[in-house]
Length: 108
Image 1 (cartoon, one colour):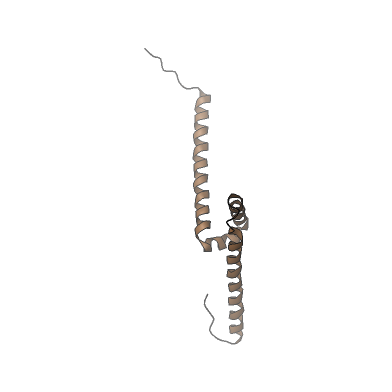
Image 2: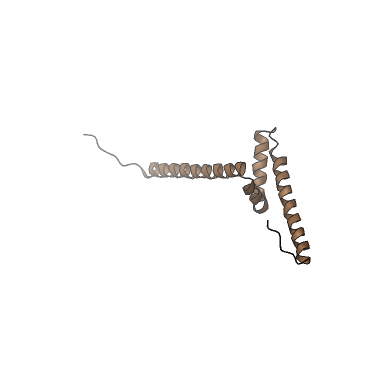
């Protein structure tokens, strides 16, 4: 008859640690892929990230330039953000000018 021997505490701890590391790494990969997908597909999200978390967007552009130097990702993204910022400045200027004339405000 075969005698069943219990696993040692070290082997059990090693197995639990390896499983935990695997789950945390898989979750981190899923979150980073979701963030990359939104940055890659939604212009408004890139603008939000530029305004609030610029370091994330800089990392995104840096990684994109290292993976594909010919993509030209950064200049196009910066141009889109600059034009959006310029349109916001223009809208604020026009609203302040209209306010001085006591006319109805423009909507964004």
